[in-house]
Structure formats: structure tokens, C-alpha cells
Image (tube, rainbow, N blue to C red; front, side, top):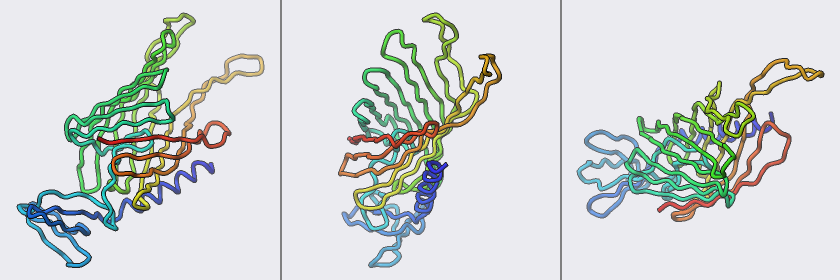
Length: 291
């Protein structure tokens, strides 16, 4: 319970920051720029409240680009599309790519094919191969929706390992502070007999979901949390070894940590805490680079 309460408190903190006002840097076609709080955006013009000039209204015809920044004017977060591993609904832009190495074993790569669709995958050395196609759309000022597929299979002959999920995503907030709910129905390659080839794919009876968040606390540091929840089936027997019943309960993996931002790369440092066993925190380390 203490583990869950800690994760909830961190999510509440991030949720509060996700409701902060949106701050932007507007690059003009004449080479100048205007930075401040975004007040209004219409089909004809954009209004920004600046620190020195007050409210400034700019016609779209004079604007080259608009980039989201943090409240104190720092550059935007370049890694908003994922947390430690779970995705947000914010998509990679066309041509953007990233590589991540987690715990020296998990290597993943993702590439933006369009502004709304990306595809990737990776290796868990030397055990498994996975693929991660994803879509994402911004549907409101601070709301993105999307979804994707996670499928993993064994690289080792005879292991017969396989898991997958089709999921949907909702992200609320900005690239600097946001929360994401992912939910989907998982599937796994189940052993149905004693033979080596007695395996069939089976969907889980209950959905799995993740609740994740990130918020920027300084120029170089973001707080991250990523929490997985999935159902486990337990077969119960009496003292004589006779079958009694089957029970299903949700367990999870809670996590928290920081992302240290560099110009294009970032380091994730944190901990993982399984809720189903009494164990200490498991250290987590990952390196990310966007190119």
C-alpha cells in the first residue's frame, strides 16, 4: 500500500503541473522571436503575454514557427514521446528518430514515418525481439490520443516465449508536464500440454494498463513515474492437493526517477518496485538519444 500511495502522490504532483499555462517561443519570418504565455490562438492570429512588452498579437502570416517552452523560457523537452519504457500519446514527428539502451540489455529504436505514425522495435539481448508501431494525434490544446501494438517473441529456439498487447493512449498536459493512461488487452503464448509444441496464443481475461507522468523541475532535470498494472491468475489447492478454485488479482510494477536532459540525449535514473513481492527497489538506468 505504501508503494502505491507514493506513486499516487507523484502523479498528483505531475497532474497539478500539467494544468499550468502553456508557454511558447514564436519565431517570426523577419528573424525576431517573441516568448511568453500563450493567451489565444485563432485562425488569423496568436496572442502572447510577454514579460517586457505585455500582450503581443501576431498575424499567422508573420510567423515562421511556434515552439513550446517551459515557463522560465528554457528549451522544450526533446523526449516527450515515452517515459522509462511506456509510450505517451504524443507522436514522433516525421523524420525524428530515437535510440534507447536500458539496463545494458534492452535496445530499442523508433522512427517517425509521418507526423502521426511511427514504427520501431528492439532486442532484449539475447532473449527476445519486439516491435512497437504507434499512432498519435493532438485533439485539443493539452490532449493527445493514440495507440499502438507491443509484440515480443523469443530469439531462443524451444523457449516458446511470446507476449503482446494492443493498446490505446490518452495524454493530458504539455511536453513539459503530462500524464498518460495506456490501456489494452494483453495476449500470451500459453502452454496447453506437456509437449514442446503445445502452445496457443490466448488473450488475457482482464485489461492491463499503465499510468505514467513526467514534469520538468529544472533546466536539466525531469521527474518521471511509470506504473504498470496487470491481472494474475492463481490456482488454489487444499492441503490434500485437490483443486479449490482460481482467483484473479491485479499486481503491478511501480517506478519513479529522474530524466537528465542534455542537448539531444538524456539519461534516465530510477527504481522499479514490484507490488506482488516484498523486495527492495530495483535500480533502473537508461540512455536515450534523439536524432
